Image (cartoon, rainbow, N blue to C red):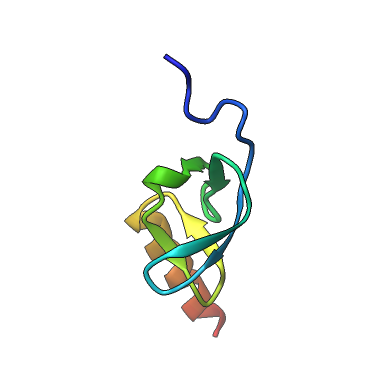
Length: 71
């Protein structure tokens, strides 16, 4: 079985409300909080305002609370 991240490299995306646009093709993006690779077909969490992806809801919450603290 081929790994879905093989040969694709890191993608660059533009995050919108409810969807994203591929700017540079690739197989994954990196979580802005954890650095974990997230396959594009598994990407569910991102910030439109900050234009960054998150591995899961906990990472999204951590980014949101950190941004709110900065003011």
